[in-house]
Length: 205
Image (cartoon, rainbow, N blue to C red):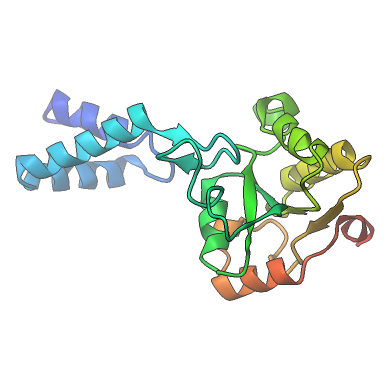
């Protein structure tokens, strides 16, 4: 792709670094921004810059938050004895959209993936074990995607929690194998939460 402007080329290259965006889409976005009033581009730049510099993570569940405790963890109507373990903030948003879950979350920040160099020490697993060890938690729901990495992470955490007197469950397989939670429709995901099964049972299926 030949560019008539080095500035345009730099903009396209940076936009194309975003996931799911190729050079042609990046070019289309860059040219779109060029046609907009300058203040629109400035607002976008400032919003992204402020987001990156000031973003916080909830000190309890590690969800993205503007405050030390996110709105879910600080909500007295939520059940702190019920924890749903998810990969990232997209999964929190997907489950919250179903309005079927009344507990709190624990965001791992990823899944165990040796190929990508991600081990248990790179995720928020120890902090989850500490929560369970405190004695307040009664059930942990595994809501990771049904991929090999998701299943590996579920099993690793299950082994870490095995010695504690809690219930461990997993969302029902209304979510197809290999699917990510964020792409599941709200009804299917909601039913998968409500119809969760004991984790030990999932190991036999």
